[in-house]
Length: 122
Image 1: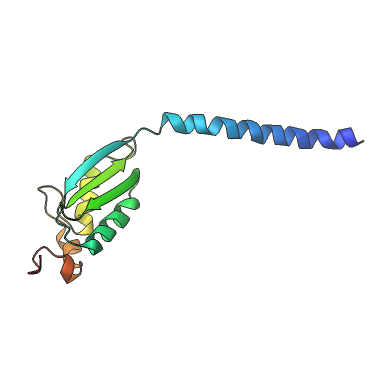
Image 2: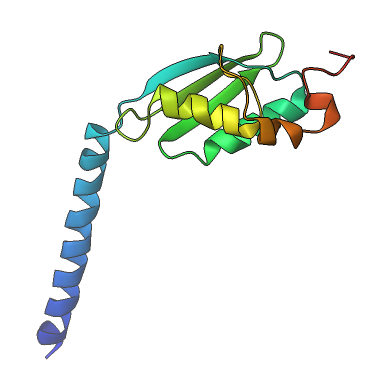
């Protein structure tokens, strides 16, 4: 009787164990990443936080890091999910220039005064 009850439990555990072993192999095939860099109009730590957080919500982005002194944003992303053009647009929609393309006017107007490139302090 004990043998009869333990067979379904053994089968269930074996199945879940086999599934867990195949998942990492599937992830390894799609884990290739690309990097893109954009010159931004970001000027302070608030800009850094805003841009990095905004890009974290973009599909395919694995990481985004802004170097404030150089104003360079480095984005690591999955090329099968997004493109540099889409990432540049995301930077613009956050309110910052991306390379030679101007920020979205509406998003720029919503930035705090300290983050605007027209601020006399910067």
